[in-house]
Image 1 (cartoon, one colour):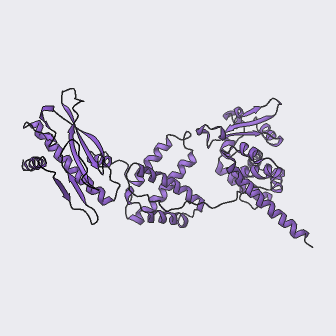
Image 2 (tube, one colour; image 1 turned 90 degrees about the vertical axis):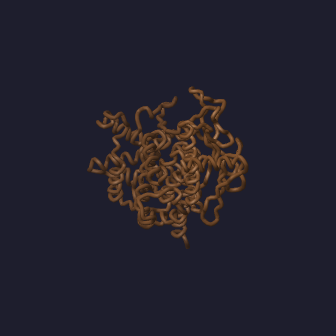
Image 3 (cartoon, helix red, strand yellow; image 1 turned 30 degrees about the horizontal axis):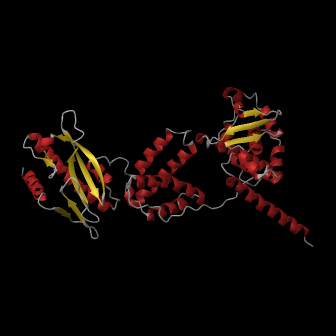
Length: 454
């Protein structure tokens, strides 16, 4: 009862004058905590926190009692929270912020109020030491134990990825989710050596660690600049969330520039494309992969779009010509018209579709082409490149680049039309191909110039 006596005594004095508790803080911090002095507690000065307990007289509970609330005020802004306790209106002392009853329930309530008051001081001190952005909402969360979930970096990211996985194919593609998982794996390797522990809280993140992670991805991870930027964007998504939820005060990415290197897409020239098309293969798997690759070269479809192409995506216009109308797998969850590819089918891709129309896999799955997994496709394309004498790194995506350059732009197809066929959201994305074509043409003309000099 000694603690309660001191508590009531301090409240009694608070009715006579404005009493404040000064808490010893690190150098540079000055904190003043005020007790209840009135229903409206004013902030005494910059950087102070006031604690007020009051009741809702107009919202009585079923038992006729008034709910008790706790209000934290910091720098003029405040937030309230119910303390899950109630009191008869006639027993509440508004000036002291406690019950004036002497029964067991009143004593228990006043004890709990004293505990909450002390806990608020403690949590405020913790946040000061953490250099966190201190807000009334955050103080109340910590006081009532609602701020303990998802506070660590890796724990938060892992929970976030689990949520993404439930939205696979709706908001996130499998490739995107896998990229987030790779970021977590890289962080799991660096954090123990950098911080000396398995996980860290968000407020421990610093710009120095962001730079260290960048260097780690480049040296230990062996990643190129553009891949590093994609990883960092995944990382930054969670730090932005932590900032929004007030789990950290400073942005660790401040000053970090996510500049990507301009890279020229790999594509086949006209002669290289002809070499692939005319090559005779005695190995069935290579012939199949070659046909699917050529089909993509003449339609511009990405691997995932070729793999999911079905009869529903083939439409015939009024003139009897066949078209592919298909939403891109990567973007179809957005349901935007700009993500729809409209591609007229030329004789070459039409012949390939007819060739595999009765293939057992196509009949069973209802697809247009018997596409194998991307890893096998890329592996076999390297064999095809060797057979055709092509020195470039042949992958399934080279076909899309070839369509955007050699097949279309090089044959004077307008940039706007190429953009529509590729399913680009804007011509800005397609201009990348145009830039490559200009440099390619210049290089070709320089070769002509050297040959014709006299």
